[in-house]
Image 1 (tube, rainbow, N blue to C red):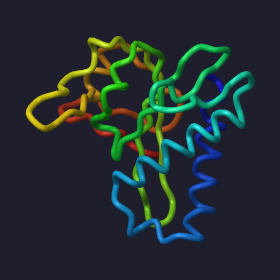
Image 2 (tube, rainbow, N blue to C red):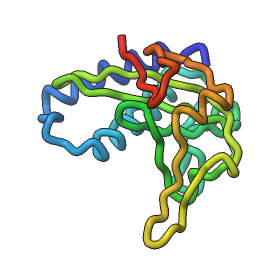
Image 3 (cartoon, rainbow, N blue to C red):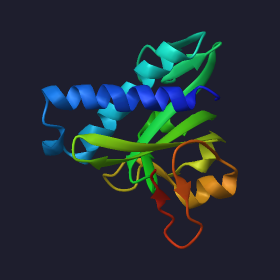
Image 4 (cartoon, rainbow, N blue to C red):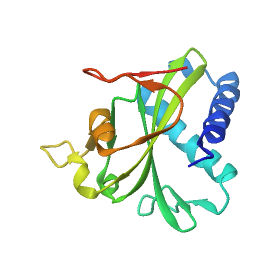
Length: 160
């Protein structure tokens, strides 16, 4: 994952370009997360050799040398959510983001997760699974780019 800093730089660059066309400050955090996720996928395949995007929800977000890589994004980097396909055992790039006007700050954590690591799902009408930063740090995720993660209750990434 040595190319992650360049991927994140390109994501921020494309976000800034997009914000000149669209008032991103009016978008919901959910929509911003989806856009950032798509930008990460796009920039990753532009930067990382032998990588390609998956062909739909039934596949991983990205394949590198035919190995799956899932991309998850969340505002402030505290807890990531996903649907039924989030429970794949795979390598993951967990991206936390914070918006500052028309720009964004990013950090990325790389970690290998098992299907059993994802919690929740199919509880009442709520189908989403989730995973939080505390668990990822205990699991041995490695910061691939960006901020410093404070080790105290309710970990919050510090963006730089």
